[in-house]
Image 1 (cartoon, rainbow, N blue to C red):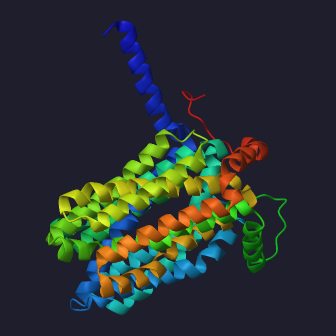
Image 2 (tube, rainbow, N blue to C red):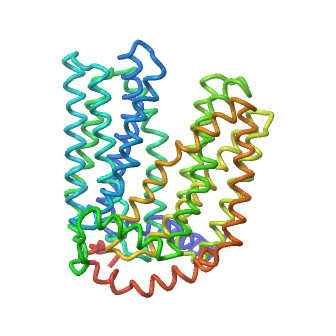
Image 3 (cartoon, rainbow, N blue to C red):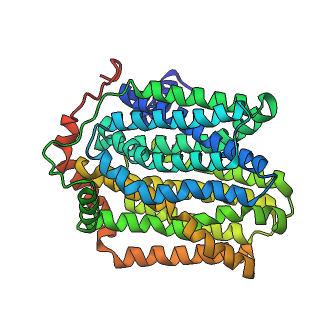
Length: 446
């Protein structure tokens, strides 16, 4: 290869890498990203630790695992609108710091009770329920502040990197917690998680304040919540994207709860096979996020969104009818690649379309939609019990594909989504340039 061709290849790889990490040029986003990764890693690890604690404290009662998850999920569903309204009324960075500090206190109480041998299942339930109340006040602000830091045009890459980080912590957090429990014990594992929470808090201190729009009228918290719902209803592009995003969330994503049935009963690969299935799904989610981060500048959102949801439904259908475990592994990997692509594209389009004064409330609605996943779990589990897990997942896949076609054909707002997002980038360009806070590019980026 000639020297000139080598330079061309090097320039190509350099530009590709620059595209992948373009949002990390912003110093403020780097601190935000470090905070998010440290916090999410600790949180994902603690999900496993709390499950082990609940199992041990109740003398190996499997129902206790469901109760612990239930007391987190329900408050998150109910409290999210209040968290979104607060995120649009106060400095988002200060709100995140306040809630992170409260989470550290909550987890520290569990740690103290654990090391003093005073921890009972009721203590774990109460303190876990408190986390379920705290998270909805932080998560909408965490999502909303991304746009404040990188601006509307940088959202695609930033949201994909955020989702990729979440998928990475979803894979590695529980694994690391399981390994640490076996090596250093439960109490020391909890201590390490507290250190990670502290790193997340310290990194967030380096992010600049982001104040809400001073000109936005205030109606009281309940009035702001109602106004947020009304705003979404009065803006068809945002409304249809929020509802469209529920299609895979409610219909197809509950298939993950049936992986244990596929592993143990359908393919007879045991707990190790179940772990491999979950790992393949998690890695697929990570790959999907990286792909979108790499190609975030494309304005063909609708085409990629429809392609990814159809690819997700098709690969999930093939997964459900696969007679072999080894064939199912690449299928579940691809299914999670495609569903992650869809969710990142959908969520980014919503972020681009909304003005900053309502961003926290719309993000809280997105968070509520994730909390609706258990609603799909119950009918899918019932159908699996009556007719079999493969049949349940296959039916859900077909229904999702049919609904995707209905949404596309019946919604002019969805078909115009590329035009709407381009118009929003122009309309809100001044808001992004003002920023109400410095975006802090590094000297190299400047």
